[in-house]
Image: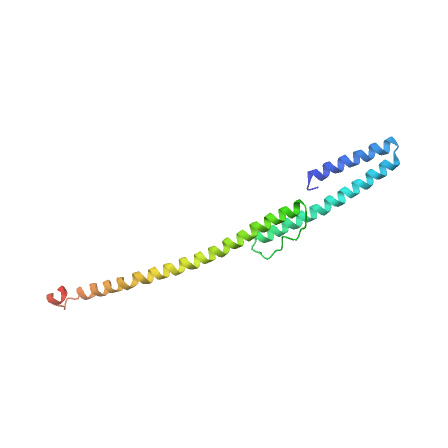
Length: 142
């Protein structure tokens, strides 16, 4: 079994049932069997819900942000689900902010590049004109 606590619970319940059967209390033994079955039914349902939360988290990790994780109504699983939903919301917000920052950075770099190209082109043109040997000294001074 995956969960050691379930194995431990099962051991305790079976031991109690054996003790009840050995002491001859048939009603107590049947009640113990019923309560054991009920306990494992409830535990199984809880672990199914936990497994679903784990699958949803895994789905979110791989980029599926449309997972509805807030579908629990009460108890510790609802609190856990609510906290995961808060984290998911924060991740979405940060993702959007990162996209906006990336676009702003791209536009800023393009603008800086354009701003640098214009004076560099002018300087390059002047250098090529000054390096021309056919231009006389007076034109070079201007």
